[in-house]
Length: 320
Ligand SMILES: [Zn+2]
Ligand SMILES: [Zn+2]
Image (cartoon, rainbow, N blue to C red; front, side, top):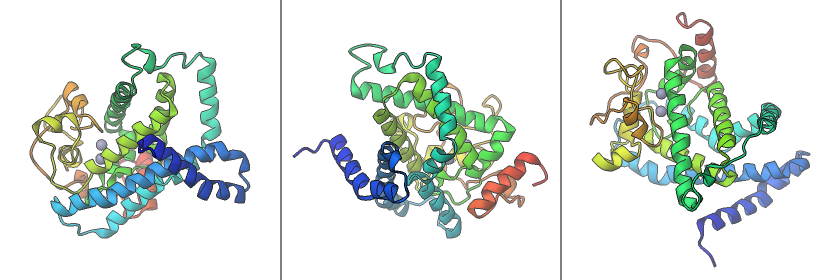
């Protein structure tokens, strides 16, 4: 019997597909979507595994040394809803049926334009085609894309109004990562899909890259006093590092000029903040949120209120 994690994952995916997805698809009259259903089952399994790690390890960390007491459980429950919608695949299924045809034609056009004709795996034969090396390269590459997407979310007024949904959580926990505007998610996912095509990442590697990124994102939002020390803390984004990004008046404004408003944008690797001059490794744990919330600005309590208010801010930035 093998204990290869990839084999184990594939076995579990097959089992889950046969036990749940396949009967559901046939029942709903979508027997023609079995291949897509199998892929979706992989994402569902990734989400279930992530939630299992969150409920055991991350929850234990949050109980061990919380930054602040959880006084607003209702606010956390909304973030749990965001997490379930995303990690259990509801968002992807909705995208598949709404934007799927659009993406397919975009992908078709990219292929007609001659892409991808190469893969990052082939860049340096003997080195970059080694599974671990290419995986780390893909992680770095997608993290660099994430870094600049995140800078853009803070740089452009209209994009900030969407991203403000994420920053308006004043009770930040491990559930807060997926608290985003749906339009914002569509934009980010679209960029990722196009980049994945351009660099020719194999689908299994792409799933692994997204899975690792999401898991560390959940940890970095956790309500826990935890930094990874002077060395590891500069290699991987810690809860302390990301909390500073969410800190009122600092994370998305600035300590000083020259950082285009904010600090600690990196998702996985602080190296991008270090290279582009936006890193802060201060040993502090402050309240999170947006400055104008202190003056009473309302970003919405429930899921729909948060989504709707962001659209209103887009139309009339100052009056809502
Ligand atoms: Zn941000
Ligand atoms: Zn965040």
